[in-house]
Length: 133
Image (cartoon, rainbow, N blue to C red):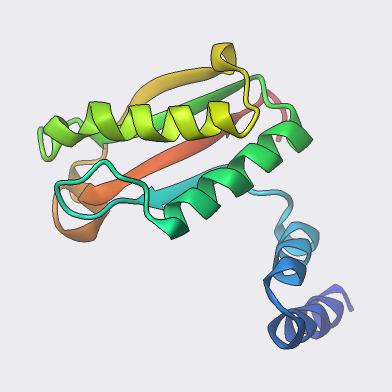
């Protein structure tokens, strides 16, 4: 029954717009804990989509009250480390501008060597950390 409700809500989301999609996602899967922001190659400038994702992350942080927020930038295997610090700074500043307390934000690395190729190298993850499920 829950799946039928979710499918009906998802169809409504497609027909009525994006904001309903987030409500359906939260109903089916729970609120998101990881947000992925992609950057242009060799750039630390947030795209309009990136700005929207960080804004949504900030709203979820204010709603969920996580114990910490990690910004994971760069690949530990040495892939695109020169862009890691400025991308971290761009995402961090946007989160702070959107109302996230600075002392809640910490930096970490994306340590998966599989992500050393292609578009995955151009990403930053915003992770909401809690002790609960």
